[in-house]
Length: 338
Figure 1: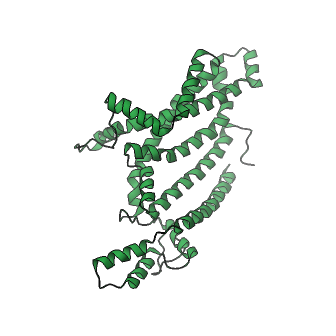
Figure 2: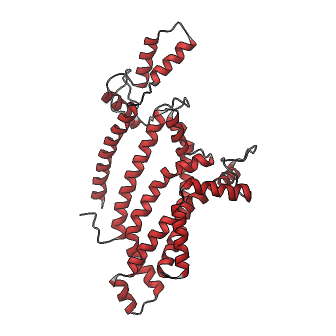
Figure 3: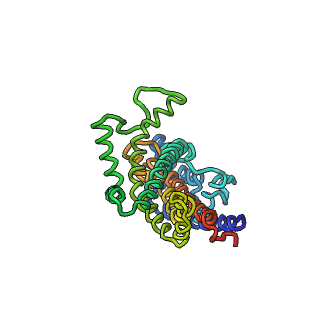
């Protein structure tokens, strides 16, 4: 297992390096020159300055002088700047945001924690509902309750996330006045400590309900289909012929076999939910990485956009590694150590 994980990590690093160059190349094709913008701002403030000198200064300051490969190596921290220093991704420097005027790491720190908190609870709630519901529907296949759940999941799966968000805002925030429409804290309140955490979770409640609801349809149907296939295996028929209880058969035999396809969907959904939260964060005004990423693309703040893109790429690669390792733990027939 350790040898396999080492090989996969080496493969991931190669893919990450290749994709980072492609992403860097794409963003450098955009008609954005922050060195020229900074030079123009200085010229506007002081007419005695020479544009060419200030432009060269900011090019060297941002590491934009030289060819594309040199700029890329500086960005990842493998090549020196004009002053001989190394200050890139390998040194923990994600760049400086033009819009915020601060290092990217400082800009995304709080939004990243908000997004992790939001998606963590949404994932836990979704799995806590879809897994028991899918198993129940598989056991009661063809019953009225199963048919009702299937109709509900089709409707929920077909509705776009922004439509669900608008409907839930109208119902829970406007009509019932249970949750706030948007925001992350109560206006005019300066809560601290645990009280501030409770206030944040109160504002997160409606986005969490929307994200959980949007994931119920697809996950429930997939768990149900996997359990139905598992319940028709020969080993299940043998267990029933031996007189084992149905609950024991489901827990010890069927569920273990149903986990194999569910693992890939669950981990894939867990990785995809971060990118899917971009729309939810913008609708509810949550200061998350999705909103920061969207604002960066709108404002041509390429340093933040590059950092966010690398985060999503790294998340996808780690998800694939976790999926392969989990296969070996769930299914003993998969020998990842060979």
